[in-house]
Image 1 (cartoon, rainbow, N blue to C red):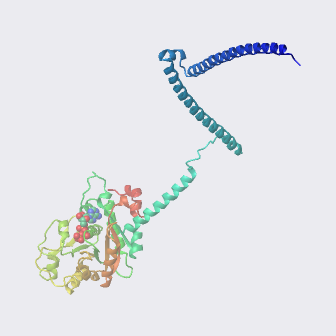
Image 2 (image 1 turned 45 degrees about the horizontal axis):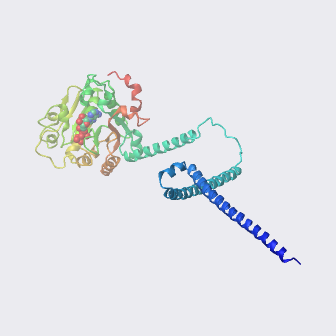
Image 3 (image 1 turned 180 degrees about the horizontal axis):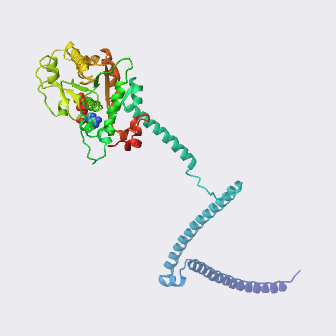
Length: 425
Ligand SMILES: Nc1ncnc2c1ncn2[C@@H]1O[C@H](COP(=O)(O)OP(=O)(O)OP(=O)(O)O)[C@@H](O)[C@H]1O
Ligand SMILES: [Mg+2]
């Protein structure tokens, strides 16, 4: 058991120790606080300095600009702003990075689907356009279009162009063709431009030869009867009846046969124009008994042919061509001439020819080359047949022999080019 003295002594030592410890503790606390404060200040200053440096801002310079407190606040705001920027940029960067990774992965997967089957070769011919196919299609379409055009032209072309057309569409013989004068003569060759004159001026020309051919065809068109009275007619006006009858008469006379041409077209009286004279008496006066045949007949000195023209008359006898007077006249002419040619009016518009045609031995029907419509010819045929006329055949007129070569293989005109030099004139 300790004594009081010992206890007092020990208490005094303890108080000393406690006092020393207290003094040391205060000093430590003070030191710790000082260190903590300096560390805090140093740390935040360094952090701010570093962040600002990362953004390229000089901290010391920043401090020098404003008051220390205001500078710190501004810097803190700026710092927060920069951090937000950095965060958003980082987020953006990360999203791009992720996307890039995804794409790369996908590409890898796609590529792995494909495999090389064969290596691509360098082509040595063009793959398009396909020449063979195009050529075949072209030929096919060309042929189709050509055939279509020909069929259309055939359908639209209702004229008669060849002897084959005459036989096929009209069912009668082809007697020949009279060329268009201008298509047989050379320009500037000095030839007459009048068909009637051409026959006497150039009897050895292709044009004159056509009439000799026509004459032979007509004369030998009938084996059962003599062909002496020949009516030259056509369906429509202006197809060449007068010209053909006139030239045929001249050509026949020049061949040495006694020939007479009678003008039976009372409306036109065109033989006078070709003869170049206006007679005082003519066919109508003879039919009416007012003049004799000899008074009315006109000799064409150039060819030796005879003509019975129509005088400018104020009267028209009744039933001019259908009556007995005409039959009697024809009988008289037949007795005096070997061939009697009748230049008539067109069949469709005028009734005269229907009355006259049965009195002739044969009817020579003319159609203008490529012009006269088939229907017109067929209608005229019906009219003529209904009165008992004997149609010997059809002759084409005003044929362009140069053009005809394109149409009929069988026609004389087709070979015209090859034998044209044969003609002396
Ligand atoms: N072969 C031909 N060559 C050149 N021109 C011709 C030929 N045939 C006829 N012509 C011309 O055609 C026109 C009509 O001829 P033409 O008078 O002979 O016909 P037509 O049938 O007698 O007529 P119409 O019915 O009016 O009497 C005339 O100008 C004539 O010169
Ligand atoms: Mg006429």
